[in-house]
Length: 454
Ligand SMILES: *Cc1c(COP(=O)(O)O)cnc(C)c1O
Image 1 (cartoon, rainbow, N blue to C red):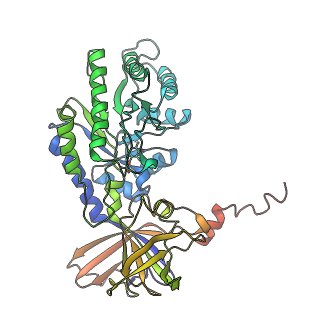
Image 2 (cartoon, rainbow, N blue to C red):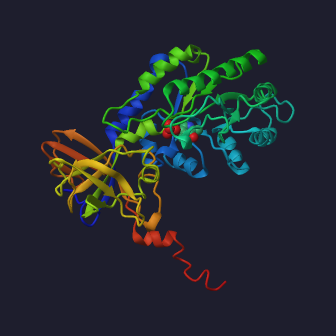
Image 3 (cartoon, helix red, strand yellow):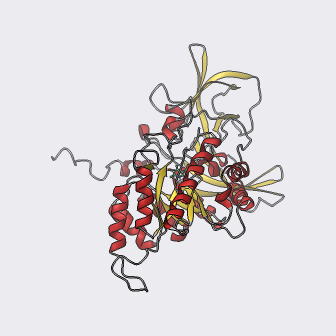
């Protein structure tokens, strides 16, 4: 607020805690280093869908984290961030032939989702120029590490929409379906260049024990395939992401260290050095490091319930607004000068700006009473929230700023920093706020008469 990033004219911003992101990246790497045999190759590929912002991908990459991408847009973001092909994994249930061709040309790892996709990859591998050994066409190995995604069908969690390992999930080859296991084993036996096996057993709402079971089944399948072909053909297991996030308090739980130890107990062979590993964590790396702060434009009362009408609603918290039972967010109250608000808790609604009744960030929440000109912060929104704008009511995408605080530095001379109580806070623009002109341009503004002339 001191720097004018937030105020009456800019009533909503999103913030990213840069030291927090770095710390989570370091915890992730340390957790797997602690359980894996020395020199095990481990690629932690951040699931770009969780926070698709180029500066975030770049920051993570500088801290040892690659990228898991699932669309041409996500791949382009990872490349714009400078993530090299060897640190990128392409998953998606609907890759076009052109996307597959590009991935193979770049040497990006691909996990085939289904038999039809594997057919397409076969065609692309056949067309590869011969390798140095000069055998018949198709005898050379693609540069891309290639695998198949399986669905261990171990069951779902508490959020159906995020449960990828149910019997009828749309992802991967269902391991328990009739004939599927046999087909998979044969698929590897027929293709010496298939060297990876992938499963992502689910995201928020999946118990850790279920995730571990999914990985145990995937590991057992890899062992079966390698026995069958008589060599360590599968050399890398991609265990997906999905570590749940605690949205109920400030504490990070479960931790990467807990999860890695659980996996080491449940699937010891995973870490004995015979397999390289790929992980694909998304939400757990970023969620706790993002905050949306929105001004209370009006404070009113309806049917005896105080309602704070803010600028943060469905456009930045789509899941919370449409499925509040599954996605409750913590809300923090600040006064008009930006300081934590004191006062007795009052049950109130924190509403968004969109024109439908359900546009509530929180309903019946006990907080110090929010008044006109105060601010409400939606916490833990660093993944799948403000970076996932939903253009309802043509509401603008808020600006996103990274911040870092350093004790004892002089903030007086730098216009992009603010000094408060001996703490210097520096901000960096990650994404400018969207302008009204951009909204018009993205909404067919260049062709107003397109339909009238038809
Ligand atoms: C969404 C997704 C992830 C990341 O899930 P999080 O819950 O954000 O950790 C990883 N892998 C695949 C294939 C996904 O679809």
